[in-house]
Amino acid sequence: MRSAIVLVGGAARRAGGREKYFFTFRGRTFIDRLIETLQEVVDEIVAVARDPGQCERFCHLENIRCIPDIRKDLGPIGGLHAGAFAVHGEYVFVVACDMPCVNPRVVTMLFDAAVGYDAAIPCWNADMLEPLHAVYRTGALIGYLEEHESLSLRAMVRSLNTRYVHMEEIRKIDPDLLTFTNINNLEDLETIDPSAEQGRDDVSG
Image (cartoon, rainbow, N blue to C red; front, side, top):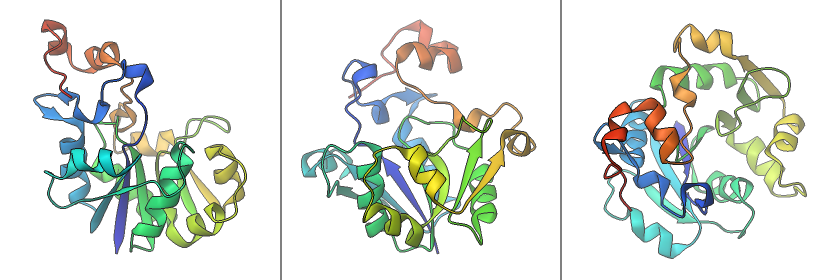
């Protein structure tokens, strides 16, 4: 069984307080695009929100569960902690909610690469990693997060038996590496969707 965790609990400060998962790209919200993509390659999807109130924002979505953080105000580490305890798969793909172009073939590649390791982490170089577009062995994630002190994703990745997947390998599947497109604000959205320049009605929430 393969699982996915979508982290939706960020405060969206860089997006002017707007909820990025409800930004739209080519007529569909980020969260809708993510769910459709992930359903092609995983058996369950768990969204992790800040609190029960934020979970209610996703009650209209089918085929996902939304849970709140267990440990509050820890950023992505808190979301990973809650998500790891909620999923059932031996391996889990972790993704941030502001990545609307995730490529299902890349996700499958990372699942395959993770077998026999604690994690498969895309890397640009030794220092530039993509820990929020990566696959982890759920047991290893829980083992680390139960006793961790650092809130650093880098420290977590370095502590695991990690397989690093270089971008040149991923380019064989996704030549322009669109799967890693990260949208922090409306200006970022316009760089991948020129139609967004027609107006900013493409954003809801």
